[in-house]
Amino acid sequence: MTDYESIAKRIDSYRDDMIRLQTELTAIPAISPESGGDGESEKSSFLEARLRDMGFTDIRLINALDRRVSSGVRPNLVVTLRGRNPGKSTWILTHMDVVPPGELSFWSSDPYKARVDDGKIYGRGTEDNQQDMVASIFAAKAFLDAEITPPNTIRLAIVSDEETGSEWGLKYLLKAEPSLFGKSDIYVVPDFGSESGDKIEVAEKSILWLRFKTTGKQCHASRPDLGLNAFRAASHLVVRLDDLHRSFALEDTLFDPPASTFEPTRKDPNVSNVNTIPGEDVFYMDSRVLPFYRLEDVLSEIRMICDETEKRFGVTIEFSPVQQSQAPPATRSDAPVVIALQSAVKTVYGVEPIPVGIGGGTIAACLRSLDYPAAVWCRLGLTAHQPNEYCTIENMIGNAKVYACLFLHP
Image (tube, rainbow, N blue to C red; front, side, top):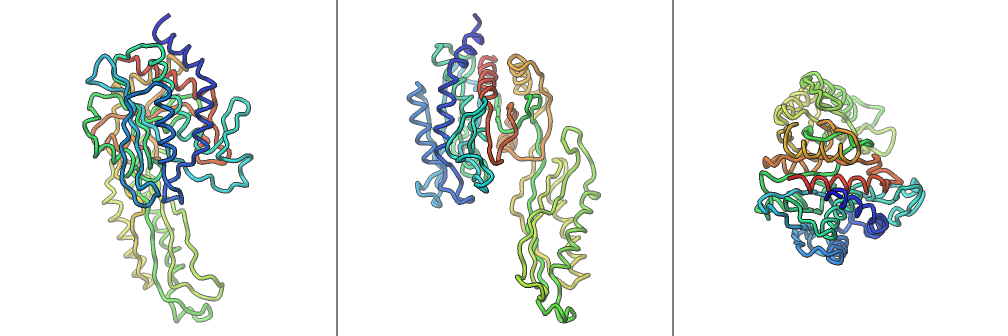
């Protein structure tokens, strides 16, 4: 029996233990203060104790100070299993935090009580990101239990704050402990994927979320000549901003969709009655911009459109970023991490995933911005952030085998 066959057999034997850990993790909400929660400390403490019970001894707790949560910290765990080559590590980076469950009436059961049904584990966080957190933990445990020393050091980073920007998560970890990370390391972030596992994300679009505030003059709706209708001007602005698609029209077929997108999304209430013309109006736009465009140029074009709208309607328009992140250069499609992942996925699932780009954001961007080549992959059911979120037990076990293959890659 080869090392992989031995480890894969052990992973199969962990099925009940993996379900149990998923159930325990789901029962501990880890929601950021931005979303009304108290952070990840309770889940981190539980995880650290469970990891030690499982036999892991090299566990570092790296806290980022955050006074908004009761513990005062946002915890990050780094679990290390030494390999024969101490100068190179293979990383799996997952996150503890989850999004709130949303409207509870849409759930068929308590989102914080994991429910196993028809090969699936239901509950908030079971897919995003506990599926692959648990998979990576048990992939590493198989090496411990089999007493097999991997060629390279195994590192599991289990971080905070992924859902709301990573300032207290991976970004903090990279600043506070830069010596942990090496340019020749393999970095895998299992936070994007497909149902067959046939895609590896190597590039992301830049993200630009903007808040627009239009200020006019409130008046009675029967005398619009006495006021300046902020809502009308803002509505015109929304339509004018669609011209950004023409100004930044280049495409890249690595991405789906291949073009930059500029979408008006949220609209805040203005006046509460029908017969008043609003003097203030607020709306938001979500832009996903291909990485070869500079966000500064996009912002300049938006300012020009706003200036034209101000002149036409006599209002003032301010806009400010809610989130602004220039995408770093892509990971090369022939980078060692991509080649290793393609081989591992083909071994386990019989498919050879292709490199793609996405419009969403992952913590891989934090790594790429520092020239660490990272790849984003997992096989999943695409239920993240939805009511009745679930992970399939088959994917959780299969992905663990993919990570075991990666850990065996020299």
